Length: 179
Image 1 (tube, helix red, strand yellow):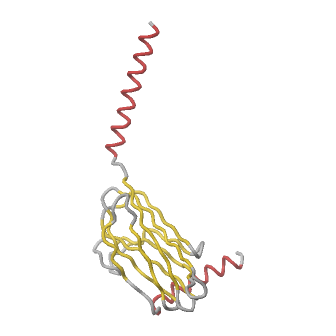
Image 2: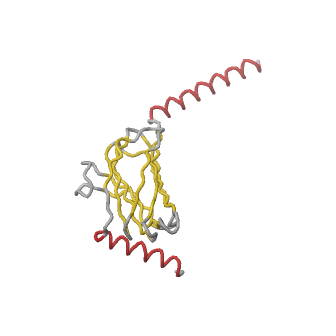
């Protein structure tokens, strides 16, 4: 294991273990995500560490992608991302006993983290974003949730049936032209 990889993992671990002691934690409701319209969020951290949650709901039959980007305005705002996670929250309450971690991205790149999923059930979810700041004022980051429609199995069946019919017609025509 190289030193750089070890240092990144050590930073992520220290952030996760210190999350309960952080001075900057917010919980923001983003509302309902809509297919084709990105749902944006942002955070401002005024202390050395931050751990923020952003609650939202997904529509039926949707795939989704999530991204967060830290940006710096040196020396005032300097941000390093450590953890970015998607959590299912059936009752819509962050931290209740029914929360299920669906996926996480941990400090591969301290300036941007991404997650993507195929079809997820309609319902309540939240994103967890954690990191550290070293700017004289704090840190800044932005993110987005992108939702795409995922066709139902019946749509694929109709598509394949249509291709089969077109193939049969083409075959019949080629036989008629050959005769």
